[in-house]
Image 1 (cartoon, rainbow, N blue to C red):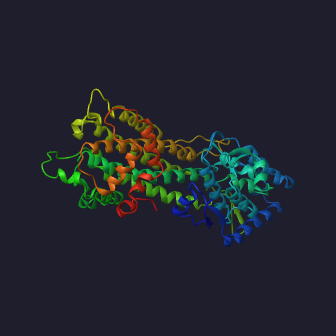
Image 2: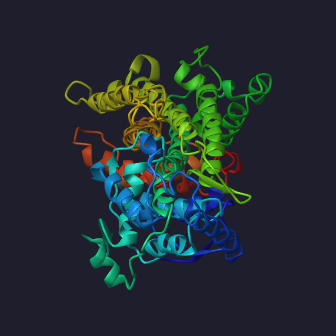
Image 3: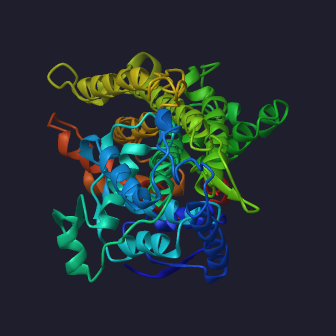
Length: 515
């Protein structure tokens, strides 16, 4: 781990979340100022255990069993059984990076002082993160209401020395990893098991990680679209600021400004300002600001929702002014709707990029050699590369179906409307991979198109992108398998290297990044 971050409950920013999701995550320390609030809420729960009044989750059963009273002697056992019974997820484990984030989101939520847990519970979650003891969380099994019950139960079992973890590259029983890391299991108190597994932190963590990846993907797609525009000698008229100003959509205005900056100074563009008989370009070129700008606006909406959710208190019941109040903050509908919006964005980025690839290989529209090969017939060029992009774009259409419109009642109809937010967020990862492949293919195809226009050069910043592309994929003048080139280019897209090739010298491009 590289540096230290202070976790101030309720004050996450997207910039801090981005740092916490980095490949080299920081050590995290809890802001001391929040500890009095944690102690006060824990004291109220302790007082409730000593009284006779029924308090949900403290001295009652859960869900449909809320009317069942639990004997005072069994209150600690109740919390232990809760974690064990709810840890029933299935599927492959979530990535260590997203589990680290979930640990921090849960710790921050509990540390706001409305959940009634002791400091030791919050400190235990942070200790797992800081010592690299990463719980194994199966990716399936939550409907995104009553909290992400099953995945959070798996995450919290290691606190009590049960379940499995990843530790220093190994998958180990939690008790063994805790001993190696110098940590001791906790004994949970009243309500603490419930507070740990109630909440939207899994859905939110998955969605936030996807949001950050979408930010990188969007930037690469802006650049790939600009490179294609130059490769087919498209018009820059549709990017005129006046067109976008009279519509007033902020994402559209910002996107058009970035395109003007990216293509400024292109010799290719200057070479065909006179004598080009094409009146209008296809929509995949001409309407990029309208399509991608709308996507940017949706990404900004999702950012607002997900940063709020990162700072939220979402367990139940909550402690206010000496009282325990039951509610429904665990319902993850805000996350589900934001994730569904991101799914449509990711699908649309890929859809319009696929259309640009189709245009590049179509000699009638692009005025480049058929399928971007100088010797068509003997060579197939980029013919089947486009087919791959089309298959991925089609797959994304199915995955983009909104998860939030589905609901299956659970818990004997007590939980009769659920959000499906966990799946809504989880399915974004394969969609991102698909679209990153499409954008990678477009970059390869656009670069191939530029080769047929030499010795003319594109804009300086796009020539920097050309050099990056050529560092992993030489121009293809005779057929060869492009599979490795495509995989290497996909890595550059997914990691943000495409945007980094330009750097920060284009403020209009930087203005598109989520903040």
